[in-house]
Image (cartoon, rainbow, N blue to C red; front, side):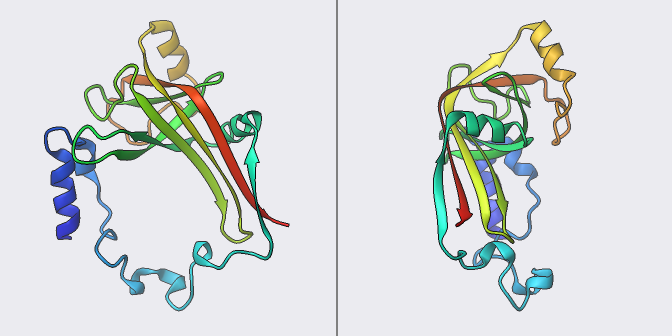
Length: 186
């Protein structure tokens, strides 16, 4: 509990990230979660902690395959470089808009500055069949200010931010590099 509170203070400090103050995950503590809180997996490994399957194959995805996978999901993670004591990775719901990613955030919150370099990641894992994929975009942030574009994006399915609140700033991630990997059992 003390660790989480200290981390919140660190992130909320000048140069930190204020949104982290609203984190409510009591499972974050030294040594990991209490084994008694693991539900049906108290006496065995959870599916994502099982050993690798026989003959796993890790493969690179083409850029087109990456974009196809991105279009099937709506939650990803934005990685922002350190502006204080640590870099931050935040979950966001997003839309694919052409060959770019757009997401909403609070003005003045943990928004990437216009032109700032950032990373974006989406993945999918099938813990039971030991298959999955991951796509990583290295790019730059562009604040979307054109009223017509903002209106068009805001009316698309999936555009409402899960975090709630006033998230009026749209950020477009202009990709510089799009890479991906998949893993499956042969």
